[in-house]
Amino acid sequence: MKILRLLLTIAFLATASQALAAPSPLISGDPQEVPLKGMVTMVDIGAKACLPCKMMIPIIESLSEEYEGRAGIVFIDVWKNPNETEKFGVRVIPTQIFYDKDGKEVMRHEGYISKEDIIKILTKLGVE
Image (cartoon, rainbow, N blue to C red; front, side, top):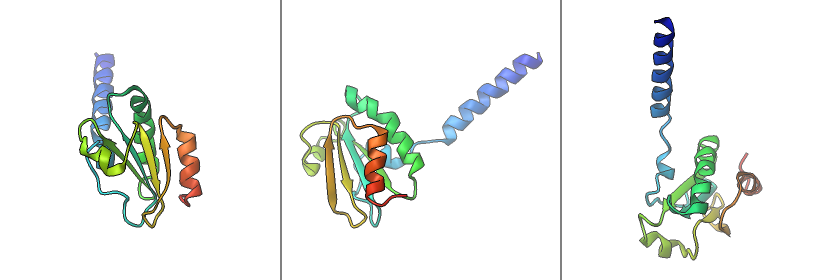
């Protein structure tokens, strides 16, 4: 009985912690105002259903948490919001657009990009 109670408690705590750790609205896939004012911003434009985009999801989620308050990490799903493709001039997905803290586009990358490479770019743009 004690083991069952312990297992139920662990399952409850795991479920509760997942509910509390809701992802940032910036990575919801919905259109966003970017770049974020006064902050280095990376926008990942893709779709939750394309294969390279799916590979980017855990990276974007992780960076969103790690850089909260220091850099804007944004995801926009262009399959759900097709007008965003033209707005950003996207030719292929995923595309990552990097903006400096003044809101100027400084770099664009097409396709999958590793977390390490994104961190290098953010660091080069002055994010600690």
